[in-house]
Amino acid sequence: MATFQTYQNYANHGRTFNTYFLTSLSVLASILVGMFLYNIKALDTNNAGWILTILIAVPVLVFIANWNNYSLRTAYYKTWRDILQGRVDRKKLLREFARTYHIKTWRKKVEHIEADGRWNFKANTPYIRSLTEERDSWISLLYQECIDRIADIDKQIITAKSNNDSDNRDLYLATRVADEAEDMLNNAKSAAETYFQRQKVAMKRTAKKDSEQNVLNSQHSIHTLQVERKNVIDDFCQSATRIIDSYNGRHEKYAESAVKILNKINNLHYEIQPIPESSLVNFRKDLTNGNV
Image: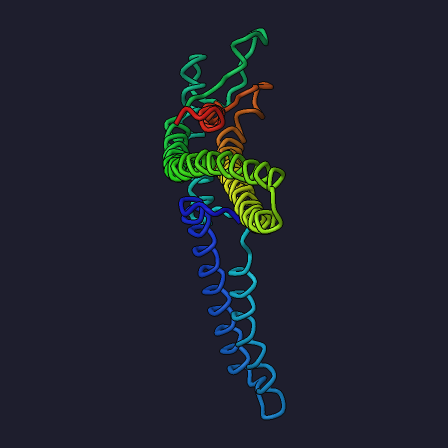
């Protein structure tokens, strides 16, 4: 599942509406079935228990099955609105067709007109523009949430790189000090001095190893943050694509309803303009190239 709150809000709306709608229908159906069985006196002491158990269990199972389904679903009322608006716009397009060819009704077959470019229609309807604006609004909210996260990660990367530079300087100094201690050990003149220098070398080597580990840790932090940045961008692109695909699906239902009759007359090729391309490609490019 996506981690963006904007996507969760978008997905949960359809999931919540559909779950409660189907659960309400199942509750109503169970009540009606129970009343029907009661009225026809089909309930008795022998079967009332398990029949009532089934009637109660059905809404519960419907709720659980739908609530645990995290696939992106469009709320039913939006699907109904798409189909209804398609039928409303179909009437407008039919009237426009009749006006175009100066005929009283679109049902009249148009004779003696060559099948040229005039038969290829691409309608740009207000409803498609409203769907486009709605989709772009969600994508913009998602993008804003993404760049806020990216900005926070970039600040952490800058801090991690600064720490890594400091760790490298410390390692450079620790290496020089350890090398100097090695030289002093090699130049020791007495057993006491040799013992003392060995203790000192051991301490300097430990300090060098600690510095080396600090460098590795800070490098690992930078890499982890860079991977996290990439994952955020990937997550944004995947979430945006799911939203775009859901609107494309709504467009298909709307367009199918709008041109259902038109393309059956006179071999027409009537199409509804597709939803314009979103800014996802540009958003991805800006995020990947660090232009935000």
